[in-house]
Length: 323
Image (cartoon, rainbow, N blue to C red; front, side):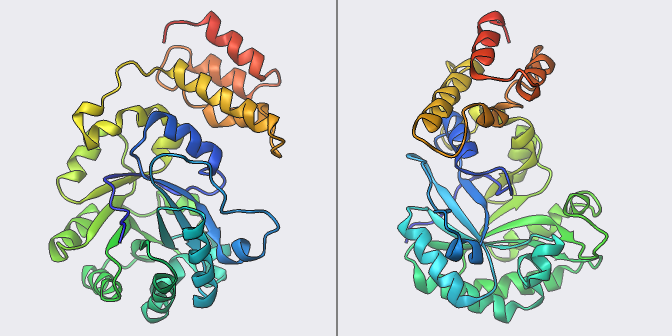
């Protein structure tokens, strides 16, 4: 069975990691494991649009699903495999009130028996790997033994890859998903101990990993890292990722200008193909590509301003040659 065991992944991010963002990321890294946004089973089964379509022609892309009805997840996983996704991931970590109110996301950690029935349904549907993304716990209780028992129970049903956000999730209604990212401390030690206790599992750590020094430190303890907000704020980081897989893959000739031109070409092609997007609207994906350069502020003003357009971006690149 093909597995999704990659040492570097870009996290699923709602309203962002769609096929356009993934095209941008793939320009910079052929090996990073990319994820879709979390797609609910209901939306996949009943949307008039083909939500599973993706245009990534190289490298692994994982479909992340959200849901709690085994038969629906069976159908969605099957469709995901047919659409060419590399693996299927079940979201068991989202703390938003809408998701938790629907009985899925991190709420599923409360009922491992039902969670396993969902995972088994997905496994029965596909020949590709089914993985799980989850938290270390719920609310304010930190209990390693409960966390270990949860992982062990899920592993017994045949799940071999766990993507673990090293925070609890607070399910109080007054706590927003954004606040959940900072309201509780990170417990990387829990994730490290899981790898020690279950050496045969592939453990990917997630949560406030901000640079390559962090990445290297974590990879000494676990099998893989997943970055989300850092990639959103600094996508250029991805041009270094392939070196993690093989030092010979370092691409010293890649530049931000090259990436921007490739993405602009893509944006124009999308518009010309009659997609329900304009080339201008896709510029938001490269808003942060200049972070860390002397022209970052000017670039962001241009991309987010009223005069943003493909010609204005090309003109900017011609006038600013040093980065």
